[in-house]
Amino acid sequence: MTALCRATVDTLALNHNLRRIRELSEGAKVLAVIKANAYGHGLVPVAKALCDADALAVARIEEAVALRAAGVGQRLVLLEGVFNQSQLELAAANACDLVVHSHEQLELLESFGRNSRFTVWLKVDTGMNRLGFRPEEFSRVLARLRNLHAVREQLVLMTHLANADMLSSDATSQQLALFEETTRGVEAERSIANSAGLLAWPESRAQWVRPGLALFGVSPIVGKTGEELGLKPVMRLGTELIAIRKVAAGESVGYGSAWTATRDCRIGVAAIGYGDGYPRHLGNGTPVLLGDSRIPLVGRVSMDMITVDLTDHPEARVGDSLTLWGDGLPVEELAQLAGTIPYEMLCGVTQRVAVQYLK
Ligand SMILES: *Cc1c(COP(=O)(O)O)cnc(C)c1O
Image (cartoon, rainbow, N blue to C red; front, side, top):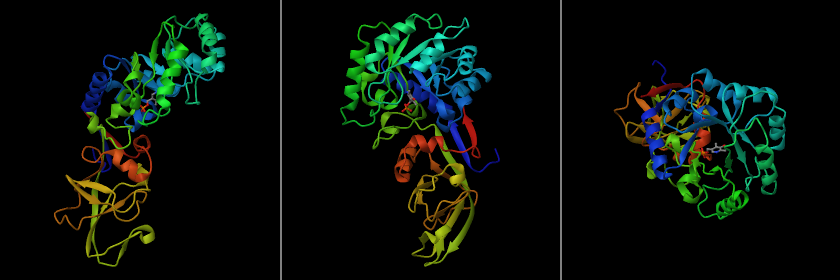
């Protein structure tokens, strides 16, 4: 591969994480969430690597169509369901399970003229207040669904947690109690837990867990890295030094002269910038890995380049590799420094970055 700026995706780590999630979830089935280009790791290759997952989930029909076109035959769930007849027809043609969360979606199914049948994941809103039927509507909606020819008998009941990453909040216990009360007595599988749920709230595991972030080896819980949870980071974002120059004490580096040398320095220029998804919010002192050593970012992140201080590493040469995040430098740590979450960092890796899969 000739590109300097690369995301290396380790599919062995991905499968390690799937096994670790199974271990933590004590026998729950795993709906592997690979929406948004598999959190920046590449939709189709990740789906193919996750052939041991019990099912795959994406947010939108376009993602499901892309998976089927690439020959992915696994059970596939549309987490937002469909929003018009043509999407419903595509869902049928591509054998998708549907989340049903609104009256509009119920009506679409009621007016569906074809012979296909769908497995429905009926979503209840227990406090997220984004998608889902309100608890007081649940029984009526369930009865309507059970009357529909287009809906298979075996439903899955689901809800989504709004605060599972906040270990001290009682919001999750309230959501769990409301879901239990609302669905009590209904014979169906249940699914509640995202990554934070399955890691931090054992009561939320139910029959199906729905991990996204944890599959990629990353922790959704602030202050805890994936490694501490027994997960392995799947992505390494790396690049190379493309120039090295001397900068004298008192001289500044980059746009806005945002960093000034306090001693005579050796500054390295590396081929990565916000045009690749390395956040511009990262400031002076952000760690970058040169081999196993942490060296500081200095000056502003520009579109195609960053600058780092190599003064303490006289051995560094043009062509040496740098790691922006990955094993040894958790994306969780970088996200905190950038004032964001690891989800956004991973999804933000742009098309320009070459992706290489390790098998
Ligand atoms: C994205 C998503 C998930 C996965 O969330 P993670 O925090 O990445 O584990 C689970 N369920 C639903 C409904 C989602 O939209």
